[in-house]
Length: 426
Figure 1 (cartoon, rainbow, N blue to C red):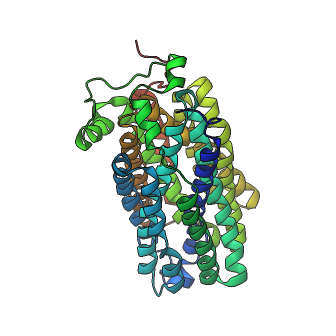
Figure 2 (figure 1 turned 60 degrees about the vertical axis):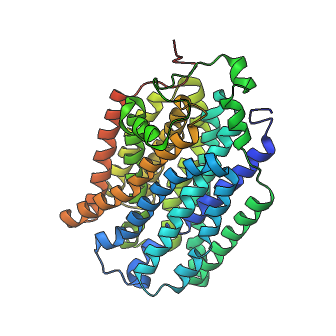
Figure 3 (figure 1 turned 45 degrees about the vertical axis):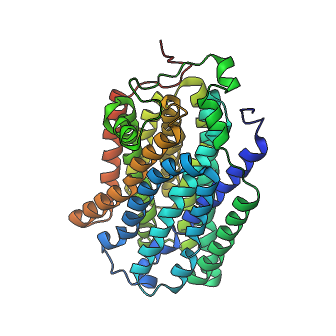
């Protein structure tokens, strides 16, 4: 059994295509739906908490499903979990098309949370199964590059589809095509990667043996820890893991802001749906494209400094957007926020994978992703409350920016370098 990107190139490419389609599935809900919440789905103007409700629902459901996906994948395999995730997505375009009220949109995003928690988790876990320890930053960077490229493409394409076919028809046909293709490919072309993880855990990972890498795994952990043990370890017992989890949670405040409030803010400034799609797309394209480089960079220079700096750069981009006006200003601010995300996003996950033993790595990633995507729900609640208390949508931007600066400081203080070449175990 061979490890590495080159040795498993066909399946790595299949998984990249899968995560691209996963990104397009969530991306179809990130432009048209919030921008037209008032005119198309009956959300009263400036009802910030009601507007945030669908992101809250998504965050709590996706967070829980990330947790479930990690444990389930170690029992029934990665491919089976991936297929279940795609089956859960089938009703989403129909619900959006037929929605008589905002409640149907919330229901659709509950199913979207299940889909994303199962499918995105499995594409990342499967590629980590197939690749070597010294390629983790690169492979997670590639994974998130493909996923957020899909998010950005969908934001732009659905804007044009809504303008040409109408918002409901455009989302129906776009969603049906993406979800149908993804399900077919998962069924016919994706292979099960659990045997690679089992071989690595059993000491048969030839690349790791040859490299001599010594990861700083947490001490005092059972050979096959249970759910409660891994959850406690990730959440508070290991300070490094706790630092990574809190940073993951807070960075999702930004994505919740981009999803729920950027389209509304830009729509209120008079921007068209295709124009909104391009501004949101700049954020996504920068985030997605730069991850190709930042993930690989972390394999050379380490994860820790990139992660902390990324939190601060992203927070600065968020703070900049409402301070000016015009497409050039908004686009530049979106690019800064996207660059910060690219610095931190793949490398938080890579840091978790560095110090999680292969026998419980899927669970560790699932629990990290549980905390991270819980940030959608908690962040959307905080953003909605900040906007409601401040009386202006701009208050949500300040809330997200301050949270990112503080969380980055916590990560810098509590965390440490996790790359086994740069900070090996004694």
